[in-house]
Length: 119
Length: 113
Image 1: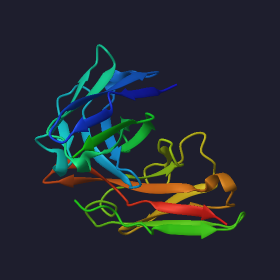
Image 2: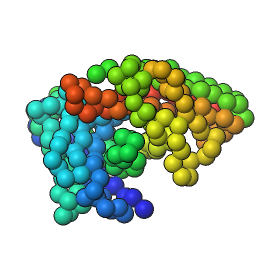
Image 3: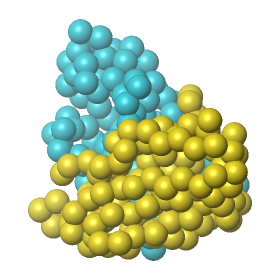
Image 4: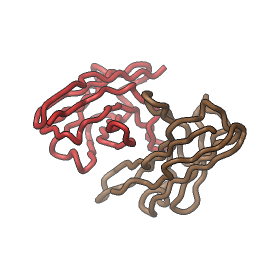
């Protein structure tokens, strides 16, 4: 059974940094692409970033380019999101999700971790 | 990239059927059969309900079905049950300057009357 557990969220001041982690189990992590998706309080879902199974390609939504970096350690079955220069509008629950390549969708989700950026 | 367009809310009585639309463009919904739908109950993580326009993952009730016509995808829930009350989001694969990109709809609050 797929299990994704995010951690690392918390309260950070505007302009600060935070690193999120997503520990994966129950599947062969090293052969799946992975996403970060966020949800601001009371708002809808927003795709943030994607990394290929081997880390060779990374893609970002425009609003986080140059500030966020997605990475992975396949030896530790862990996905990361390094967030720098944080803004109040980055306040959200951040979910990691397993990518299903054949249909390009989010097959499984973690429970999310809350990031609050205070101004 | 713009978000896909969904109605803010829909409602129906138990046993009835409802349909939620998801309108995009020829660059996303209309250009690929990579539309998926997610159910989210308050305070919970999203759950995959439909993938590749009309496919149901194992474990999802056959009361949920998906379709697409042109640039608009639809999710239909038949035989409404109380536990179907939730927020529903569509998503599509697309590209931005030839790079992969994924977009969501704004979400639809589905209420069982």
